[in-house]
Length: 331
Ligand code: NAD
View 1 (cartoon, rainbow, N blue to C red):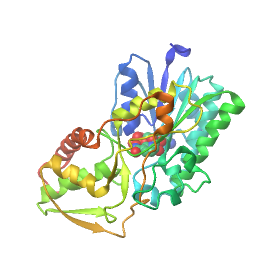
View 2: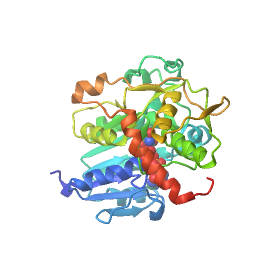
View 3: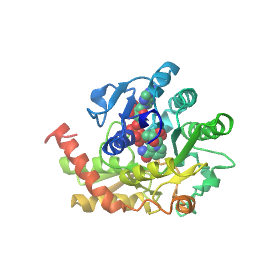
View 4: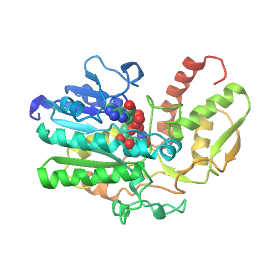
């Protein structure tokens, strides 16, 4: 067990991935502190056996308190959302650099043993993602840098801060570039949701209204890979505790088009819908997949849950939330 009683700190613990990560470590018997800016009743998951703290981590003082007595930091807190959100809130996304900066400084000063940072596939240069069937992204494709405007640049900058905190101060840092994570207990409406949850919600809305039509952002031929939350948790834990001193992709390499994703949701829901393509909606890059050569070489492990398998429980969870919120009414 690590020093400081092995206390684990998850920032952004009221969010989607953070909430699952808190659960992952508490189930392993570790003491966990979970910090988020949202009021507790808005957290996706709250556990009584966890030290739940509501605080704004853009302030150094909150980060200092959060890091007190901590062995391992999992820094997931960030102002982010799907492509519609990050495209319209670039400054807000970049302000997450305050969280990253103060968390690194306070983790260093508190003698934290390991620091994990959740970076993103949005660090990759756009010109490598122009073709839907472009080669999967290797870690070195982040340079020469031309990250996603706003959100992606903040992630790339913080990756480099992590590296320099290791080089200059000896703080052991680990960086994973997440590729589209999905699962239950996350955003499914309101603008911060990602494609899998948004499509499930739209299918539920359409079936409730009986219109038989679904709106898709873009022409549906854009490609992505989607990683189930359970693979993400496994990957985070493995990366944190392995000897990986460079940013590494953490994503599925099962490439699908958005049309394929819609078909999977239709199959789960048992419906067939008319597709209406909104060509002027934000749709992100044309093609993005994760090259998993590096993570496989380090860990002899890669995410393996298929999209079809992972989407079934995700659908069921969103369906329950949807029914609880709207009952029989129109969404
Ligand atoms: P999320 O929005 O569900 O969780 C982020 C949490 O951070 C939120 O609960 C939010 O309230 C909290 N937060 C924001 N500002 C804060 C502040 N000032 N102080 C304290 N808490 C604050 O998002 P998520 O999907 O769980 O993402 C977690 C991390 O993984 C983020 O860093 C994100 O950039 C990264 N990531 C996620 C994906 C994905 O597909 N979900 C992909 C790439 C990277």
